[in-house]
Length: 476
Image 1 (cartoon, rainbow, N blue to C red):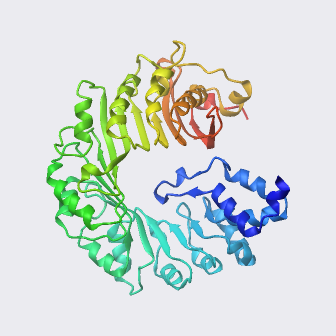
Image 2: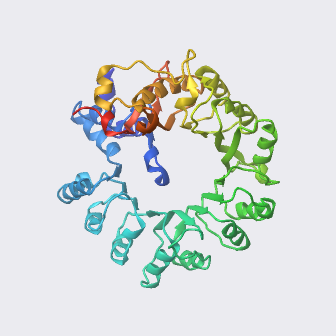
Image 3: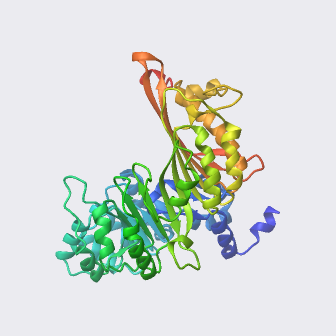
């Protein structure tokens, strides 16, 4: 069978590998890149490419199509290789250098003859780099994230160069942050006239939201709009009409996200929120922190948009019953975040009871659980102590966060077995080692990928981030 696979034309092999190792990429959440379960990591594909010359030749374009540099040393090695190896340089179509100093970037770009997209931090863009980008024959998009509008406008005022390749992948408009110049909506038309594109707008102040609603701005490339209500209460009815007109004008707008930092309370006409709160009227332990609605193929009002993302705050794990209401009101939910309160004592919830509502969520792809370890149990033990091999404790440490890591992996496997479409699980947790005044804090961050086998096993993506006191660290 392997020999039959190898006799296929290289062009067809390249198409097959491209499908098997499809990369879903979001510049705003670069840490959440996922690949299909066939090649569960780029390491697997690299091993595949070392079988023989034929497979290596067709694998390399897939491996290096999207290249991300996470350190200055790696960027220096990439630059050195591309300047002497034009065949390798031609493989790179998407380069992400957001996290590093890119003063030498202008020197590298002419060698990347197939580059289509470049992601970089806002302060890396200057007139010299803009000249290089504009003259590059294949670059279509230069994406910068979280750029300050006055900073970008200042660059536009000192040069007549076009900005048509510039895409601001996330623009945060917030008058509440100290030591930052206030944003002025008059800046948008000036930048739009120069060709700047905006794909994700975050409005983080009630007055800003109202001013934006009264404006006639047209952002042709806008795909995502986030409305952040700082004080948890606002008259949603006052923006209902302009938001409807805004969505009608912006035909590429795909999602609108509503976030309430103190939980949703009394907005009268918000889509989904009112019905959800009514369904949960007797459940005071649940707060609605945020939700996103996505454009439907056919719609006449915002009520027709589908709820695809939801964040709930739970006082304890028994509040998972809120998912029953969510399943009815948001049947197409694809992303769910559950934030449990950090408490000294709570009545734990059996993992099977916790996992049961996920059986009715066939479209769920991403789950983020925060502070769940102390709230879950199995066989009446809380928190459950997972059997640990000495080798694991010697490599990761002796803190309770190591116990939590393995217990949560087991717990989330039970959830994945119920949620048949689940692909990615993000875990953040915290606790304390020891008791009394000698207790020390620990934190845990880990991402699991759900495998496509029958058991729905989980594998760790990257390396877990474990923080613990020095005395719990693994021995060197």
